[in-house]
Image 1: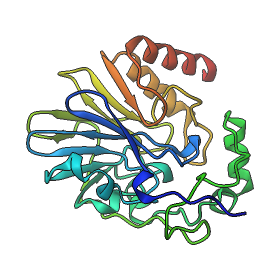
Image 2: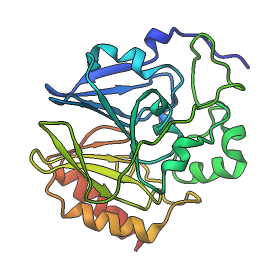
Image 3: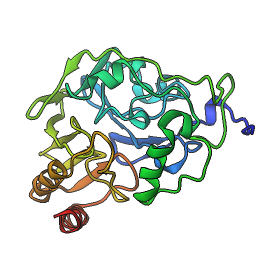
Length: 259
């Protein structure tokens, strides 16, 4: 089966959220793997939170956003859909329990059954995701093939953990260790504005907590922590952003289901 071709220039779409935050995403990537890529403009540095699949250069697509600023690229965790373009950034941050996935990314195909196996796909289907699509993408840019695609290794230049600060000069984000979905999942919390970049610790969709590396007890503890966070807005790893009331609803619903 062959896929239609699209241009590299059309691989990413974007939407400006406010004066400093821009959301980028890959429209040709299937919904399960369509990560939210967040760009935050700072005075001294810019921030990229997660980088998608890495099928097309993120730096090339977003060079007008960066405008020559130094960039800090943070991985909220090491899953395939969040780390594909971290290798493009000279400053790359990740939790110690996730860093090896960036440095030796396991994704070796854009065909899900090859990448994850039958059991892995069945686990995702049981969580509520449609796994009938035979590929991770609905189209391919020039020079990319389903069976030869490989994510490129990144160099993690700084390990970050709970309480560390990611400083942009005029904005400071505190690292929150939010395990459960994966052992080293993190969020970035800006208390001054009530802004949380949550990765896959919480988003407004089916949460995955039965992956081989997931831990439900840790996930419950993460949800209990998030309930008390005085957020104004959550910019998550997937699906639309939401406010504090929705955060509390999602977290309480998870706890009620799993406890």
